[in-house]
Length: 155
Image (cartoon, rainbow, N blue to C red; front, side):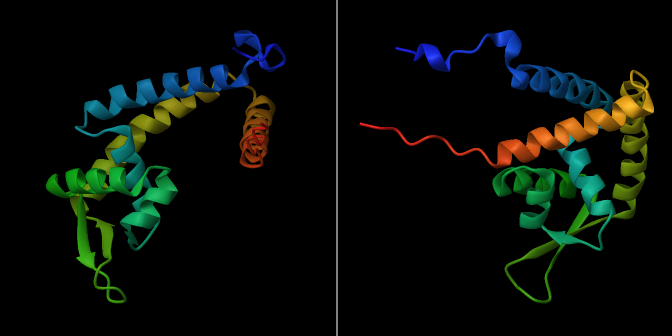
């Protein structure tokens, strides 16, 4: 039986609105990336790698907010397409360092143009002050959720 004091109307649940927006933006990006034979997670990995001289799969997984197992699959697919190279780390022989290849840099440039167009389209809905407020509110929401601890069950 559901505790009545724990009930909350669906329309009051902020997570519903956040998820709806996330699905909408990811749907648009998935469609855009499909034309380039990429997925959104593959694009995210390429984008993250573009700002580095290379990184381990584990670090890349953390930055892209996916599991290490998922990142292994992403990197395997990107490697098969010739978009990334993976070489043994000079510090740890069991760690592979991933870098963008020249083809990966070209593909990222195409993909990022499509992603930026979607981001700009979304941003046009808001004034600069509203966009800044939205970023601030979402950051606050994320920080607040990081503090949540499930109450201990009694009995």
